Length: 90
Image 1: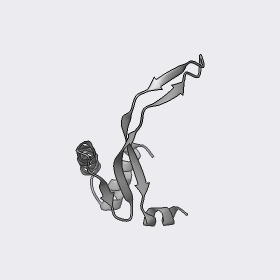
Image 2 (image 1 turned 45 degrees about the vertical axis):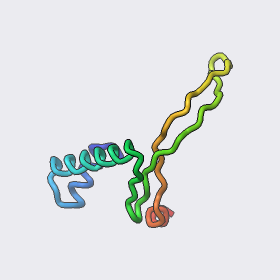
Image 3 (image 1 turned 135 degrees about the horizontal axis):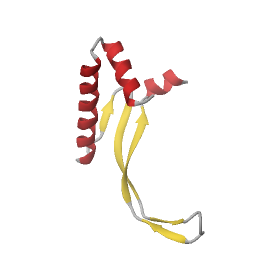
């Protein structure tokens, strides 16, 4: 599902116009991004949690040459699904 399809599904499910659904989705993405930037965790009970994790520096390999390269440490966003979401998929 892409963003346009998600907006359509949100509009149909909530009885909103597509414009209002797009504004709501954009506001959610913006609020989530701001929270993650400040180091907060975003938890949606039953759905899951978004959080920032630190990936340590490591040594990798260039697949074309086989030469070792250094990969710098960085922060990555992770998602852990909630129990209700996991149960509904199973």
